[in-house]
Length: 94
Image (spheres, rainbow, N blue to C red):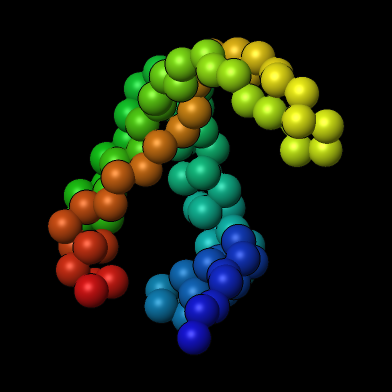
C-alpha cells in the first residue's frame, strides 16, 4: 500500500512528535526546504546523516522526440537535483 504525504502532513507529523505548534512546525519545515534549495542553487550539496544526500548533477545535451509528431528535438544540457539515500533510509525501506 502506497501513501503519499504532503508538506502539510509532514508539518502535522512534526507537531505530533515534538509538541510544538503547527505554525512553528511549518516554519521549521519551510526553513529546511529553503536552505536545501539555496545550497543546491549555489552548486553545493546537503547531507543529512542517516537519511541521504541532496546534490546537483549535470545532464548532458541530448536528442529527444516529440511524442505527438515523432519530430526530433534538441534537449539542452542542464543541472538537475539528485538524491542519494543514506544507509539508515535504505535499511528502513528494506
